[in-house]
Length: 94
Image 1 (cartoon, rainbow, N blue to C red):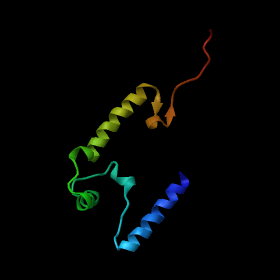
Image 2 (image 1 turned 60 degrees about the vertical axis):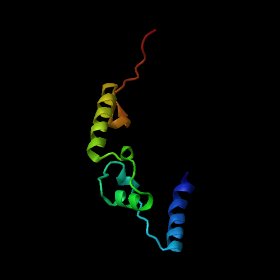
Image 3 (image 1 turned 45 degrees about the horizontal axis):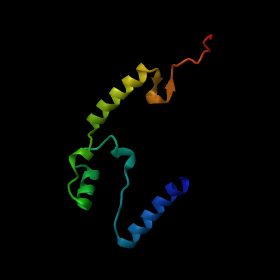
Image 4 (image 1 turned 135 degrees about the horizontal axis):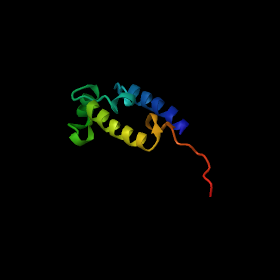
C-alpha cells in the first residue's frame, strides 16, 4: 500500500510532463466540499462530460448525513465518529 501511495504521484507527474497536461489532485477536499461549477466539477466535465447528478453530494448534504451517523454512533456509545467510546468492559458475574 505504501508503495502504491508513493508511486501514484510520481507516475502522474511523469505522464503529465510527457503529454503537457496539468493535474491538480484534490481528493482530500472533494469528499465534503464539492460545489457545482467548482474546479473539480469543471475538470470532470472537461474530461468526461457532465457527470450523473447522483455521483455528486454537496457539502450541506454530507454534513446532514454525517450528523445522522454521529447520532447513531453516540447512541451506541461511540464518540468522535467511532474514534473513541464510552463503553466499559467491566466483567459481569456469571
